[in-house]
Image (cartoon, rainbow, N blue to C red; front, side, top):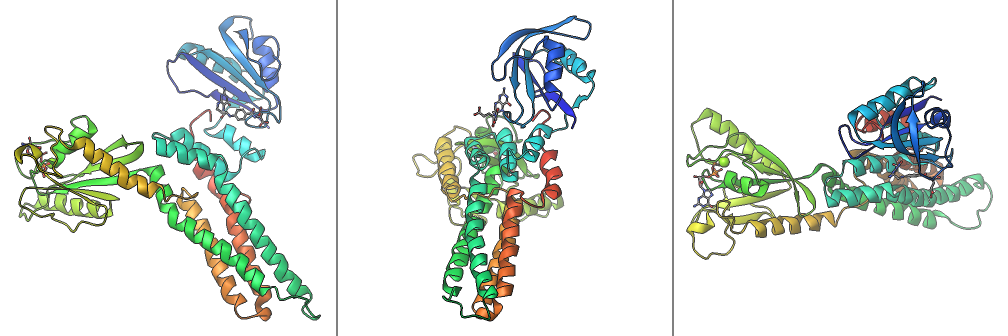
Length: 428
Ligand SMILES: Nc1nc2c(c(=O)[nH]1)N(C=O)[C@@H](CNc1ccc(C(=O)N[C@@H](CCC(=O)O)C(=O)O)cc1)CN2
Ligand SMILES: Nc1nc2c(ncn2[C@@H]2O[C@H](COP(=O)(O)OP(=O)(O)OP(=O)(O)O)[C@@H](O)[C@H]2O)c(=O)[nH]1
Ligand SMILES: [Mg+2]
């Protein structure tokens, strides 16, 4: 096993930079650079030196013993002065030590997984925790990282294993008088897991949205002030505004943190009948994106109606509040009137959806649960045929257990690892 090292903190100048080294030769590397191996889990101040004894930096050094570290391997951390030159010099010296090489992105976490310190779902949670930009993302990632998914899978697995065991007893004693009819209990166990999976599958799309962000489209007729509103919400001139109707054509996307939720705001072309070929394309895009968005904010001119059918939760506001006098549900990107109320309303609508989130946060989780659910439904049908189908029903339950196992990476790990680790930062 190689010993790997990498900068664990962000690239570039900083107050402090952390370089970590993990693997069987980590303490050996520490000895060479510090002159000793400090007692594990104590941070000590040391002068770091290269092979010729020249000073590299004065740094805090922290060691972790094998089996008592994040990776499970011997680990050393150098908490350096965070300059580009200091980091480069230390990495250079580490690279010159036999048996050491630069870590690949995510390799520390990969080792933690391989050493059984984390399961696959927790690794995904960790990846999301590092990518988290909003409160909702942080909370969800932390829940997954803390093992919520693994915990549920383990519970479901237990119920299904019991169901399999009961069925196997039926099969083994098929020739004899089986003392009790197990089908009632087996069916109840399978139903319980089936219902839990249905609930989690239904909630999974919210989890996926929390990861990727909710889309909120601003739509309405040309010139009602959509782009002006977008700019006001974004706090910058993200879109061109003008007094000419038909200014916006492409969909303009602005990612923002809206009341702790990750939101991509979409400014769209004004909806109207037009003979202008380019504007028509813009309008078609506007309709398609508004249709697919999680929520639509309609800006409507006084006396007009929305250009598309609003759905439940969609927000309808009168445009250019400043020209209307005192009117309810009016907004003006130009004066800012009603903008904070809009933010609060969007936050409310989306928070309600966030509350329906379950433990699944990725398409991979949903697909594994769908595979499991399919097998359980097949098993339930087989069970309804009576004892003769116990053997095939048990096989379906095993298929479901395998699907749940793949969820936490008990099996089929290799297939998804590369994809998951491809998005990891270096040093994690
Ligand atoms: N400096 C530093 N800060 C860090 C990390 C790190 O590796 N280094 N982390 C890394 O991502 C996170 C903390 N995660 C960690 C997880 C496990 C262990 C660890 O040593 N576990 C041992 C001992 C547990 C204990 O003392 O309770 C173990 O599990 O056996 C350390 C850090 C965030 N902050
Ligand atoms: N009085 C007033 N004028 C506004 C308000 N919002 C926008 N305007 C003006 O209305 C005109 C159109 O604004 P835009 O934000 O470009 O309108 P739009 O809806 O994006 O228009 P298209 O991109 O053409 O669909 C500009 O001259 C703005 O300055 C408002 O709240 N009150
Ligand atoms: Mg516009």
